[in-house]
Length: 80
Image 1 (cartoon, rainbow, N blue to C red):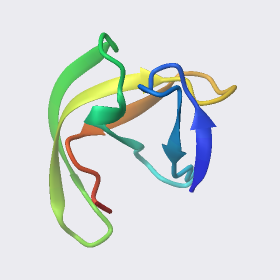
Image 2 (cartoon, one colour; image 1 turned 90 degrees about the vertical axis):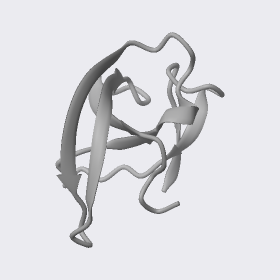
Image 3 (cartoon, helix red, strand yellow; image 1 turned 120 degrees about the vertical axis):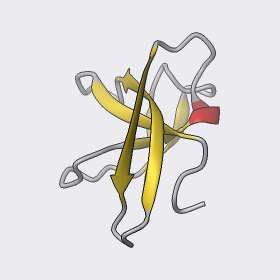
């Protein structure tokens, strides 16, 4: 876990788990600034525990100096 800069977050600075081996990236809905462009797309993903989670929204964010990256927006992150 490390702190990252992102204009799409309410505070402009937030925690992120950067896992380059992961197939998906997740972000908590309440951390996005109002007006962030989102795409509604209902899908289900399976976590490492085997549990399924429903995803309804996706967005693209630029973390630090990276190019835009797709994030699945969750009401509550699995680790919470």
